[in-house]
Length: 396
Image (cartoon, rainbow, N blue to C red):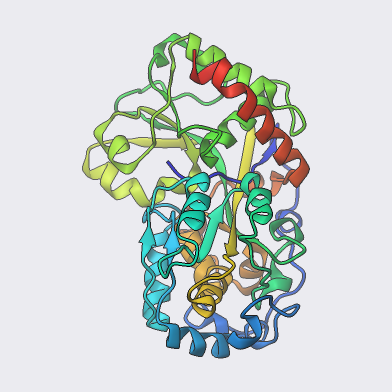
């Protein structure tokens, strides 16, 4: 299971939409390459606004922040599975580049688990220092005083829809919810939410965790709502859909882990497109043909929000990690894992997205069609799901 996720959706593909309109950024830096992304003009300039907390002590350029972070020597991370959006590759590049330790606590933690860890370990040297949570948990984290206001040095290149105006979070990557099918076990591959009701899928449709805690599961409910007459403002049709799916006997709610997928325990998974490129070699070795399809009757994408935690034991290393995620190098790492980085438009303009990397992504017209709901809509959906999932689905 992975974390709660910010959700985006469109009921149908807008074929004529412009890709850059969906991913537009405020400005683009010139120069720089994937080998040394933070050396660009944007990366070495001051951040968009003063940092809170230890910001001034850490500096305002990558070189300054990196020097202070090197002195600290470590950043505590949480909830970053190796194959999730290529986080293993991104972490390795960070450690190699800066020589700073980056241990990951509880890689498969949910957003709720992340906040619990911060609360439990508050004031201790191993407290998580950067969160990676869904926006349905952002307000809760703010109210608890866990989110530090910090704007990475490429702040102006991050679209407004993928960052908090107050600097408390950035959405460094996003993806699209998909139906992933082990065609070796189930050769009749479903292509829509409606298909999943068919009797041949009894006991095979797997939602990734509990939507009250896990982002992919939350996203599945909202996507199902959009495919069944609902909207960002009304996700009840999605809850009703899964209630029906459970009564039909088609739904199973286990974690879509690497082990579960490779064992064949998960014939059909509702999960993010970027969770499968990293698994593909192991799936092929196991003799499985896994097909990942964006459902035709409900396109839904989303991002996770990254935030520096207040009172971080290693505040400069935490800032450096956040900067690494949104740098060219971090963005290319996400792309290798099939995730779409926040600065996608900037990388396109630089010509850094090769055809080989693009092959890991959903079709360009799907990316172009993605829009993001407001925080108010997300919070409303979370409240409705929290209230109704138990009596209508989980407890049935």
